Length: 332
Image (tube, rainbow, N blue to C red; front, side):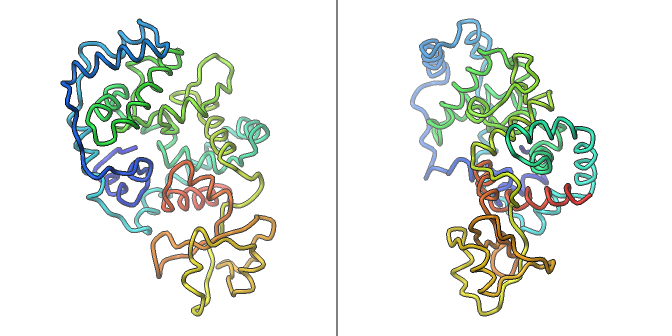
């Protein structure tokens, strides 16, 4: 997920943010075992879980060692901040919008096939593709097994990352990718979707039928896997994610709350209006008002599909940017 020093500033905002996916522990506890002894225990448990000896040898060999840079990045997450406005500038540059539109046109038939199966509109799939990996161009360079082993051994969030490590071993064991090719973010997110290994095992799809769920190099699998994830997260076909709105000065500020949901008609009665002058969506279920950048920043009325995107990444910055980028891609 992290590609440059500039993108490091996204972490504190929750964008591409592991801080939102993995809530920090109060403090790192460390591991009482040396790494070699700890790794030997992982090997034994992997075999007990049905991972083949060949996979264990290939992934958890004696040359596997902790990566200091991974620990450094994990510790630095909370040091960086970015405004909502700046976040949108980074995630939605004109070049990304233009390329996204080109890719939607190039993959039109594939995207409609995926929509027919999962009910997710093409623009949302391409928007997530663009934000997560710049359409596959920036998937991360860290060896996933070593990164996960580092974090599992570290002790700060060891239980979570130990489970992800075994999920990654399962992926290798099933032959979807090789150890050398399994590269991703410093925290183990991988492929053009930046799925954690557990998300891969739960949601990745072999859409082209070649026997591999290839989110690294096969667009059909990348896009179908994203659609499956959203569909399983409660996606509502043909409904909007949300709309930008104006709010009256006398609105009760406690109503700007993701948990304060109401039908559009009730929001309309309270004086909520779309900034583009159109009617509020009436068939989109109950919506909630949010201000991702805080008071004084733009306000959005968001619906179930926004909440589905939030299951992908628990950040209002990320989910709002994904919705806005999707809107831009669809406005051709």
